[in-house]
Length: 390
Ligand SMILES: Cc1cc2nc3c(=O)[nH]c(=O)nc-3n(C[C@H](O)[C@H](O)[C@H](O)COP(=O)(O)OP(=O)(O)OC[C@H]3O[C@@H](n4cnc5c(N)ncnc54)[C@H](O)[C@@H]3O)c2cc1C
Image (cartoon, rainbow, N blue to C red; front, side):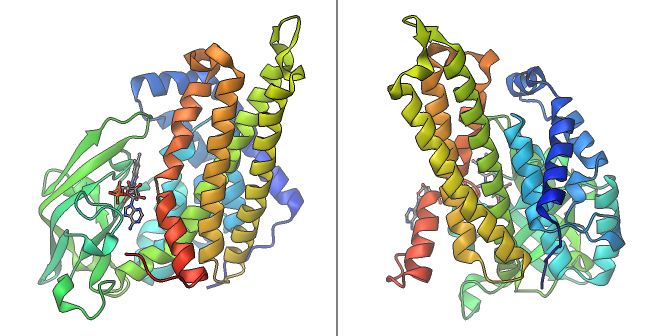
């Protein structure tokens, strides 16, 4: 499927300006407070939704703006660049693509207009399990067909935003692993309506983490999901999830670029203003060079993100580029975060400078949605044709 859009550089600049204006109405104190209280930024998510940014990728026929991935990447990058945290809502952008590509006409009509209008939230994505970890084909959550329903049993972990979402995309085994020819077969994707499921076989337990991320673990105990909520064909779910992962990686990479830009600007400004030994600290090369290095790393990663997003929009294969973009951008944002903390000296630790919060937040992207080692082994095996290591 081609997702190519015809947005120009001017259109992208306009999108960025609009997002920046919206984000400016949420001062840094808002983010400090939500972080301190581990409170979901409901007001911010509502504002982004009402402005139409979270439905950027939904086609116009369903009430979205029908934009491509480059526009979505620009939106999320700008959110992060402003100092905000888009992790509260970014999943809607990439989970929605799975519904768009593999949902039936009836499913699209049922869900997409509501998501575009902001009356339905599709923020939860249940793939990771405690025992399977990164090895997704070893998941144990099962969905067994019984008449016009599937009965789901098992557990997911790190299902983020589940308490702030109406729908969840769920990956479950529909055929036991020892009964399929390839381990990637026999898994299926379901749209679970959590409003109906809560208390009827679905339990959500929040997990407190080092960042404000609204993540949870989820338990399924004979949860009945209508067979009409199966997405696409039974048994092909792993393929559908993989399809969506390139979009996810590119969008997360764009967020990392936004983080890196925020850290670099913050450090640059501080290095120009802070005076010690009778001169600005930024006059010392020992302070300048890490800022220049972080800037270089960010710019290089940004090119890879742009290349990956453009390939994705043209409908070309972009697995290697999406993975490299995610890794390079996550490393660039971490490098910039580390530099920014160091540039601020002791003040980097003070909540009111926001550096320590962003520092914690950007660290996540070395681990999720895929850890750095797994990106490297993907490149080693699939691009460099080295022997499979696991
Ligand atoms: C805050 C947060 C939010 C998340 N949100 C979601 C979500 O919404 N939905 C969802 O489904 N998941 C989510 N995740 C899960 C995330 O995708 C996983 O944590 C991640 O993929 C790693 O899986 P794991 O934690 O089980 O690590 P493991 O698979 O246990 O790996 C542990 C470490 O070992 C390394 N490792 C494992 N196998 C190999 C190998 N063969 N070669 C080299 N190194 C290896 C890994 O790189 C990693 O460093 C989230 C995680 C966090 C922390």
